Length: 204
Length: 174
Image (tube, rainbow over the protein chains, first blue to last red):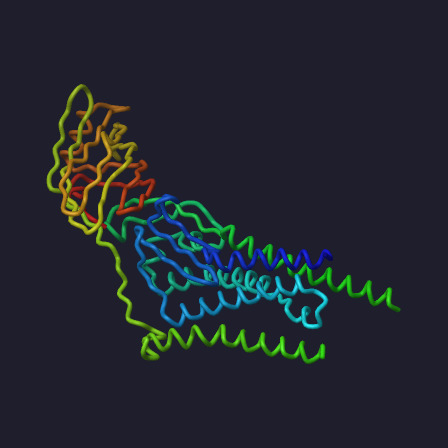
């Protein structure tokens, strides 16, 4: 089997596993990681928010439908890449390769980075009390961050003091596997181009 | 022949891709009943009710240490407790510093009443100074760290506050 086919095959298998697992690609944990007070998990295939262990917000049906559609597209993209790598040589096999693992993981990272950058700023400008209550909210809602969320007690209890709550926001191993799958599908495409140009050179 | 099979594959992929996008949207739209229910359903956000009341408190003194006994009642809807508490207390205008710690962890189920016992040991100054300052409602600084249990969750945090004795009894819940 040619190197590019192996690369495509590994890329497809990795992305298929990630799409079928459907776990969070980015998560925000407030409190003890094993027993979080607030958990926010997001991926192209789902959204989960838990406060004290129970779900507080349900995504609207339109969002759930989009998540399901994205998962179906990811499974389809990964499956076709696998079939294309295994059945190389058929006239239609090239048509089965796609960059979905790359576009989906990069697109997700860009969207989450933009959302985590803009949402806290928007929330703090829309509700000025929020900026007073949690001065470093924007830091907690970063793509990759850990530390303490400072809660000013004065707006809550008229006490001159603050609480420091441990938080962690991060891109999970599932995201990195999806990104690796994306990088591999680009590498496979480059290798297949090189292979093609070698063959046409030999032919001439 | 090769061109024909390729066209079939391309067409099939396009149809499957379109179906993968349209089918979930159609199914969810049909199950929600209306466009408003599909786009903006009326969801009630279930925020757990965290509330407790300070029923009574007692301060006893023995062998150079204070024992603060707080009777708490969980009036909220989720279990509430303190697993760990330790820190330092100092007077703002006088020379006194003490260390406090939790005697034993406490977890209260909704509607349950229990005692929270905190031990205070002087580090600098004597307890009489502290006692006198509290009776005059003088401000004191409290810093430390704690871990509270809220339902199935646990929240470790550090805290810093400037308080007056008259303010402490007024607080309860979040």
